[in-house]
Length: 398
Ligand code: 3PG
Ligand code: MG
Image 1: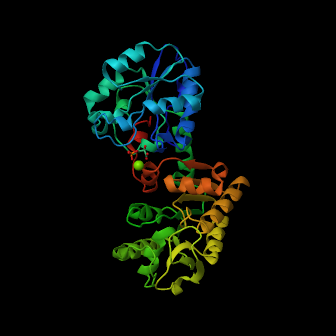
Image 2: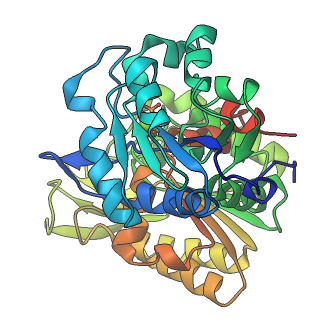
Image 3: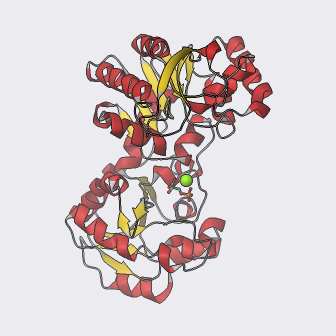
């Protein structure tokens, strides 16, 4: 694996100011943070630095304010949540640069934790503007990036700073890179990928990359319908991107050329309504009624998918197999998740999963802790699966 400097290389930290990039882009509903997973993930890095005597200055974005100070996207309310998770005081500064930041940083003592306001309140953040980077860098002696989930962005606080200050990977970034290396970088074979979710259109690059990397590609969710339809099978009222039939055939051809098995559903659970508990029936894949839609893959497909998981040494998973948020159409996703978790617990499988919906699906199946690694990254995880370079990671390489 490529070498990164980590917190192990940061020993004498008393009196030192560490600019720590974290991802606090957490889900909020009615003003309340509904999931603190991302905060919990960076807590060990924050506390390790604080315990080592550093003055820990948190940099983060929230939402997409596009260079404006949008009050609803302030990080101020998040400071209290970070404080609760850490069980440690978190100070807050109303700007990430300029006087408010400088004043708050000057008031810090060793071990203090300070959160600076949303970096995206300045247009220089997303532009990776050198002047803005200099403004940020003024407040730190070291830069630590623990935000893998924002590493696909070449922004000032994710990429630019690493050119100005000695740069290190935080503990979560370190764990994530290690897990991803096991997943696709240098995996034990056979490698099976499960890709689900609604649309092929958002995952074309990912599918094209995977067929060259993995031994079997299981396609589920709405996107499977596009492949099935491209094989000339009628999918009724199922979600389907008919305009992507040629793309689907291209991906199948690329898979055949590289010896990657494409595993499509052979049966499906269909309904006439998209709602929990909707009347449903199981049909063969070539017998979907014209007025019905497929909401989950059927039991024969589940058996086939689980057999692939049994065969696999490594599993990479992004996207649910069915409409898991409306039971009983969660059956396939839950079954595969439980099977993968059991194989992992027995030490027979390395299982790496990521992406927003995937994390919810694995939480729903109650197996998140049993997987080798579950990434909270959305876009960054997809870009990694697409084989694209991640600027926030590349800049940390020594
Ligand atoms: C995320 O939530 O996926 C990351 O924080 C990145 O956010 P972004 O997609 O707005 O860049
Ligand atoms: Mg995103």
